[in-house]
Amino acid sequence: TQDDAGTYTVRVTGECGEVTSGGSLVIVGPNSVESYAGMAGIILEQTIPNPFSSEAIVKFSLPASTNTVIYIRDIFGRTLQTLNLGRMEAGNHSTTIQAMDMPAGTYYYTLQTDNANITRRFLIVR
Image (cartoon, rainbow, N blue to C red; front, side, top):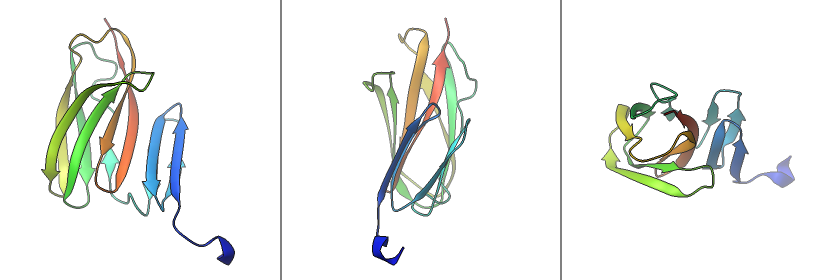
């Protein structure tokens, strides 16, 4: 309604991950998290492969130049790795996640940009 007009921060957490954004409509599906408005055009794909044992590729797309960081977290939210990718131009990009000494289990990876955070889940098997 008119009385409710304004900018809101939306945070959705579920089985498929988490999205935090300002002033966005967020749609959460069983296998993906998508957001429109504030995050329009940002895509974070599922790791390739998933599950994996040693390393996986993360592909993502940015609609504009932005500072970019990927965080790897355990199921308790503890940050295990930080991949500071710096300022990246618009377009398609990829990076590699190293499983290193992480035990088998469920983990989350978050793509953080200047305007949005998108989180997805991956599995490590041994």
